[in-house]
Image 1 (spheres, rainbow, N blue to C red):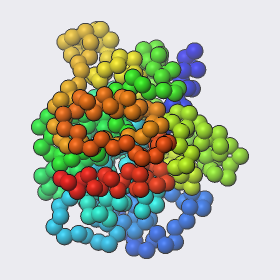
Image 2: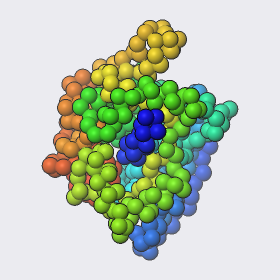
Image 3: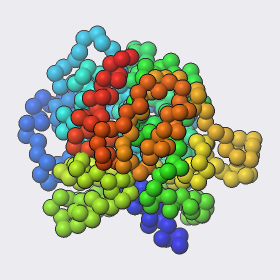
Image 4: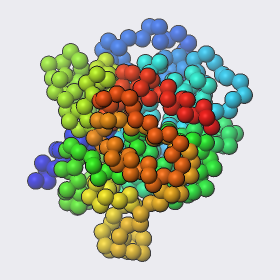
Length: 412
């Protein structure tokens, strides 16, 4: 049973696919995009900064150290392809999804990928990498090869990573507030951060929540099967000393290359597997970019982060990590984990959701919307089928989502 659970969990996770500082930059190369080709999946072996540079955009690499010692890497696109804009001071901060990284906002041609679109619209764009993913596997004292490095869930990302990253971005840019975009877990940590640190409402002009997740009562697919065994999985992981799940590695790259290439005999199996996990939308699946996407995602995270989402499915509430009775008493001084308070999220929020998103179900989004005090936009993507992955990877994401997001931000 344990091995069966772990194998199913691996499949589910494939879908779901910060204040000491230093910085460096890569020289941009205008005109590089003219010679680029999707043949042989050229982007699969490039890092996020290298991909950005390859399309001729300026890119910088920054590092920030959180209060609890994790060293995070941020990727910056300071302006669009046409050059610096004058005096608008708009700063966009993009927070990634579960098992994702900064790469997930550039997994398309520049006209369709959100990071490039924002940069070309005059925003100074910052791409986050929360603790434990490909770019943020560092700590002042802990080693990622050791179990102790991985003793965190998205609670710590919300409490430490996001605030530290926002403060760093504001310090570098001199801006007083950011425009925040979160996708899936990138929304979860936003709600949790403002529940714990409501003063950060003043540092966010507006928040766009793509496939927003707080409640998972109506999630469907294999993830609900896994959730039934959350407690057992946690015990198994701890006994085996497994702290990290699904890092980016050669095995995942080979699977993506050989099974998800549109010319592969197994391509349809790969596509249907993603639909089974995240919801259907065959029209928008970007078959050209999928091998590149899956070479970067999953990007790894802690076992506790995954388990935490299973706990939300089982409990029906939006709460902190459940350590069990004794652990909760030690951590919280009470038998059950405290609930997050969504009424503390006073930032203007735009919710963007799809009809066939099996992980951010419309009913759960409606519940979230009812509990947030300042929902300025509640946007149902106008397409019969639009799933959890489409918000970052769809072929026509600009038409269905990003144009509306730009319009929403322009109001603040």
